[in-house]
Amino acid sequence: MNIYWDSFKTFFHIGIFTLGGGYAMIPLIEEEVVNKKKWVSREEFLDLIAIAQSCPGVFAINISIFIGYKLRKIRGAIATALGTALPSFLIILMIAMFFHRFEDNPVVAAIFRGIRPAVVALIAVPTFNLAKSAKISWVNCWIPVAGALLIWLLGVSPIYIILAAGIGGYVYGKYIKPTE
Image (cartoon, rainbow, N blue to C red; front, side, top):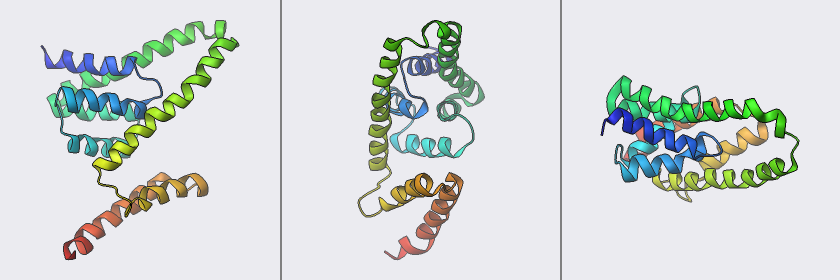
């Protein structure tokens, strides 16, 4: 099968069957790209997630572009980006066309109330799996917890957390870890 079509189709299917945005896509992308198709290793996937989170823009598009680029450079990136973006675009277009008809419907409101907790679970599970892959243990789990609390409670910009973690990781890897 043509790799461009296969990568487009893979990300289109992921995009059309995922509720909750880019982070909710992580387990589906991992299953398809790492486990089934073996386009990237688990370690590469973890690195691509970190890079995609650090870049400006939509996370789902970023991760799909990085995977597509790894597969087939620019054309691969275009195929995966289109596959990721097209389902959302089409769904939003359809909703926009008909939203006024059902925006006050109690059944629709109840459906959305039911979807929200499921989306939280879809984000929480891959977070814990990625923490295992990143070798985050009870000893160093304070780092992401402290970062999350600084952002959430004190309103610290995530860019400062990312910069501090990057500098801390560099110092640890360069000066502390070699002596262990």
